[in-house]
Length: 325
Image (tube, rainbow, N blue to C red; front, top):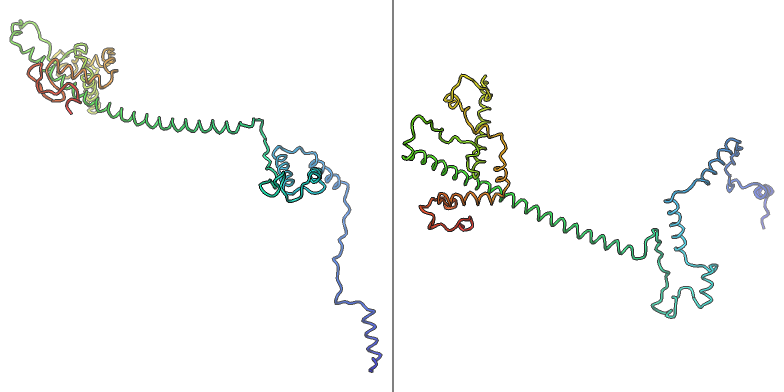
């Protein structure tokens, strides 16, 4: 047996009695806590009192209620719950269903809670849905009706413009035939016995009331355009003579040559109730009146574009546009 040397025993004793520096745990130095002053403590307590005494808003209260309700529903009843104790006394076992049919078909989960936050009745939501569906259906019907009305308005406007063009053409024909008839009446040999001392009125110069109402608007419109054209020409040429200038030295022939002696110009700005009443009619009715006047007076068919020899108008299909399709 080998006996340890004194030096080894000394080292062993030192290792047993001394500290183990390799396994020593050095703790963090504890910070010295500063003492709270009176001002800091007063401010802290004031903030805590403000937070505690602040009135919560309705949104915050609803959020807290919802969180508490979800937290309560997320966990099942424990043995300390009074309701759980009553159910257990009546034969309920944890994990089984309620009622007689505990093996199948029974409810193992509680009913979902739907919180009613308004004061409406039970069937109010269904009534609201029904009214909403009715409003949607009425809106759809209204949109469809407006679309139909718009298409009808566009179609009617296009048809009215087309008929207005036909009215304008029929008025031109009526004016031409009436003018020719007036010229033939003036050239009648029976009127040749008129004394030469009696002056004859100039041809085609009549007042508004003497023009047939069927094409009076055409004449006034043309006269208005001629009047505006002459005024624009005078302004363009920078003439010193305005259309409203009246020279006392001019005679009737001079005025007629300059175009200032026209009785229709005085009637352009005047009101004509008879013409307004005629223009207020529908375009189709105005067209019918002009076409009827041409057929009765001159045996002229506006649709055939032909003047017949007698009132029978043999060969004409009819008086309307549909008869000539």
